[in-house]
Structures are given as C-alpha cells and as structure tokens.
Amino acid sequence: MRAEPIASRLYAQTVVEHERRLPAAGEVLVAAGEQVESGRVIARCQERGPLRVVDAAEQLGIARDALPQYLRVRLGQEVQEGQALAAGGFMGWRAALAPVAGRVAGIAAGRIFLEETPRPIELRANLPGQVIRVLPGRGAVIRALVSRVVGIWGAGGEGYGPLVLRSAAPTESLHWISIDLACRGKIVVGGCCLDKRVLLRAARFRALGLVVGGLAEHLRAAALELGLVVVVTDGLGAVPMAGPVFDLLAAHEGDEALAAGGRGEPVARLPELVIPLGAVRGPVHVAPDRPLAVGDRVRVTRAPYLGATGCVLAVVEAEGEVWARVSLDDDETVVVAYRNLERLG
Image (cartoon, rainbow, N blue to C red; front, side, top):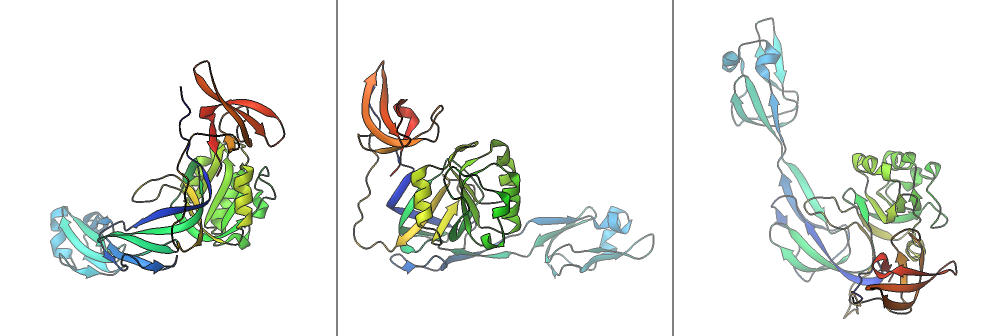
C-alpha cells in the first residue's frame, strides 16, 4: 500500500475559481477579463413566482360551475394584492381576494390560479477578482487570490461580510451572551457551538454566518431550519477548531470574507470560508495535492486524537497499512493511520 496524495483543508494563499450562477436564465452584465469588486452586480434575471390557487367558489359559497358569473377578472389580467377576483354569493355579499400581486393564469372548477409577479434577482460577484469566463445567460466565473478553509459540514447558502471573533481560543465554546447586535452583518467565528441559543441569537441579530470548529450533532437540524450560513471546520460534537485554522481567522478579524454553507442553489458544494487577499497579478504558485511528508502540519480526523494538530515526524508502512508518526502540539508523540490525517496548509 502506498501513501496517496492528501488534499489540504487550509490554504493560507491559493487561487480559487468562484462560479456565480443565476437560478434562471437572465442577463450577464460583465465580460471576460473584467476586474470586479465583491458587491458588483454581474448578472440579473426575473424569477417566476409560484402558482397560487384561490378556491373562489368555496369562499363565495356557490356551485363551482357558477363561478364565471361572479368573476371580476379575466384570464391573463394583472391583479394587485387584496384585489377582488370574484364577488357576490348565495349567502350575501362576499369576495375572494388576491393573496398576492400577479397574473390570472387560469380559471377552472371554481378555482382561480394566480401566477405571482416575477421577482427581480441581482447576482453579485461575492468575491473581488477577475472574470475569467462568462456563462451565457447565467453568470460568470471569477478568479481570486484568497485564504481558504474547507469545512466538513455546512448549512445555508452564502454570506459576505467582515469576520468577528467571539471565542478567545480554539478550544472555547461560543456563549450565547456573546452573540449580540455587534454581530449583525458579520461572520461570527468561534471554537465550537454546543448551545442552541447561539444559533437562535445569531439568527435574531441577523449575523451573516457562523464558522466553528465543532457543532453539537443535535443542532444540525436547527441550523438548517433557521437558514443560517454555517461552516463547521473540524467535526460534529464538542470538537475544537484546529489551532492553525483559528490563528488564520484571528489574523483576519475585521477583514471581509465569504462563508458558503454549501447548500445553496443551484449546485451543492463543500462548505468553505474564503478570505480575499487582493487581485491575482501574475502567476501564483499553488502546491498540488501530494502525499504527506516529514515536517507537514496535520490534523487528526478520528478518535482518540480527533481534532489534535501536530507535525509529521515519519511516514512508514507496516502490516499492509501506511502510518504516520506525529508530534502533537501538546508534545505527545503518537502513531496515526495515514488515512486519518489531513494536511493543514
């Protein structure tokens, strides 16, 4: 058995190609080669609303085949929210009102079908960089120089804003009282999240996202339900954030970053946190994935040393498996299966 290349989950400096895509066909507003800022609108479209069904016959108390004589609208007509679609009735005057603004898309079997007014959608770059490819009618791919942390679990779509630390150390759990109004519009960083009140307050104070080393397993459903952008970097449970990851994020406190939970439309991807470092000027060396070597910084991904970080002292093969001898940051030296390690940087 040989040592296979291992992908890093922490990049102090790398180049990403960030695809931004509309949920429906629309208009692209940038061209290949353009430099864009994070807030630049690069594409836009009109997203069709859902079909609403108004049971007018039931609301008026009339026979379903009698609805045409009570109609106040016609097929294809644009209507406003609260406008009477049909009025009258067998038991005195009643009205069936439009629940939303839209267009009358159909009338059948005593029901009126409304298509909501299309909603305008503007797609922003979300990262400063260079447009390297246009996706006709859909969006663009943006190339940027960044620091990048790849997570192991995530929730929500994307949030772009400044980083704010709410844990003093990678081993410190977030306390609900530390999530306050100052977190509004920011990406909150903490060692781990074990308290549902942290999620509730992050949603209440409209934090853009939450980046933690660990998340209590029972909080996953709450994170998804609240619609928060959450990036878990190290593991589920009371798992601290890896020291090198915490140090990188602490060094960038106050800087703009993109937190992506990996569950947004139209394509699911790995959760990640990306911190822009500026425009890509000239060639940037990005080391390819490779087998672990002596001196590499690593993190252990399985018990009993889950979450521990250290330095590789040796890589050996024994009993048909590849192992690594690792000097942990607490000065303990351990032997770990190669497959249970990931590179940091």
